[in-house]
Length: 44
Image (cartoon, rainbow, N blue to C red; front, side):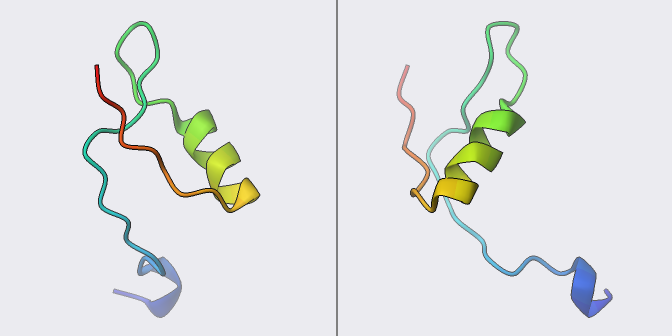
């Protein structure tokens, strides 16, 4: 795998945030990453 394709950070979370239809909320993940906030452990 090329160096630029390898993940720089791996963060393990209990669950990924999901939208109402059940898809992963990528925008929420990106916003949290930009703010430097850790990903919350979403519990339903």
